[in-house]
Length: 185
Image 1: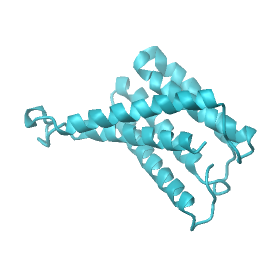
Image 2: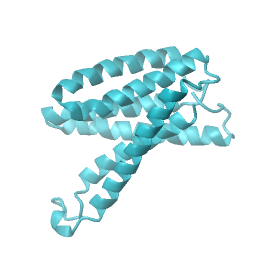
Image 3: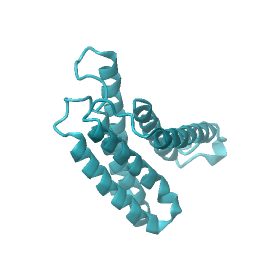
């Protein structure tokens, strides 16, 4: 939805890299959801939806079989799922913010017919602040988790817990992806 679809453009290459990053994060979260207990399954499934939705949104204009209207419908459906997850606690609020941000970007693309998707400056600015804080906090948590002493190591003794760090890294990657898409508005 951003950049040109020509294979040689730099913005197209970065868009495809973002598609790959989000799709891999979504696939990892989907695998986590399959292995998780009932309580953690909703969180992992929500993150998988976010990863795949972000991958679909990052596809350069004209390269995907879908338009902004279809993405808007999917993002609204994901927002309903995020609202449903909120009954499990406020820690699911980030999913709601993410799905609403994706719906907002799809709506902006629909209004601009895929071209000038500026959006509302106040909303875009608030989302940029939210995701900037999320990325900075997530990065700090990932760094401090990696620097944890060996006594806090998981069963493999790798220091910092391995799988927990991978989950944090996926969340950070998706946050960076969302920030990149918001910056392109």
